[in-house]
Amino acid sequence: EERDATEAQHQQAAKEKLLAAHAAALDQARAEYEAGNYDNALTMLDKLLLEEPKYVDGWVLHGRALAKLKDRSRAIQDFTRAITLDESRQDAYDYRAFLYFQEEMYADAMADIARLLALDPNNGRAYKLRSDCYFQTGEMEKARNDAKKSCELGYEEGCTAAKRLKAR
Image (cartoon, rainbow, N blue to C red; front, side, top):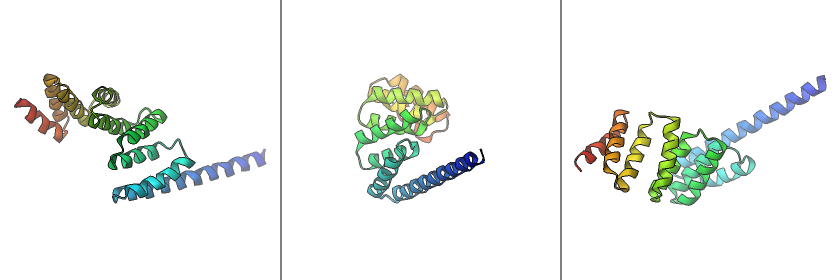
C-alpha cells in the first residue's frame, strides 16, 4: 500500500513536471508570436502539439499565427480543433468567426457568433462582427441594431459602426 502511494506521488510529480514544461513551451511560442516571429512560433507549437495534441491553448495560438501568415483555412482548422477540445473557448469562436467573415463565409461566421453570444450575451465585439455580417448580406436594419447594441456594451468599434450605419 505504501509503495502504491509512493508510485502515485511519482506519477503525479512527473505529470506536473510535464505540464510545467508545456506551459513554458507555450510561453516561449507566445513570446515569438508577440515579437512577430510567426514561423518560429509555429515551429515551437508544432513540437508542443505533437507531444500534447489536446493542448487547447496551443491550438489557439497556432491558429492565430497561421492567420497572421494569411493561411486562413489551416487557421480555421486549428480553431475548430480547439473548440472540439473545449466548447467554451470564446477566443477560438471569436477568431474563427472573424476568419469566416474574411473568407465571406457569413453563415459560418454567424453560427460562431451565435455560440459566442450564448456563452457571453454581453460580448460587444460579437455584436459588431454580426453587424458586419448583416451589412455584407444587405440586412441594414439588423446591422444597425447590432452595431448599436455593440456600442451600448462599450465596444468602441461598435460605436463607430453605429454612427456610420445611421447615415445609410
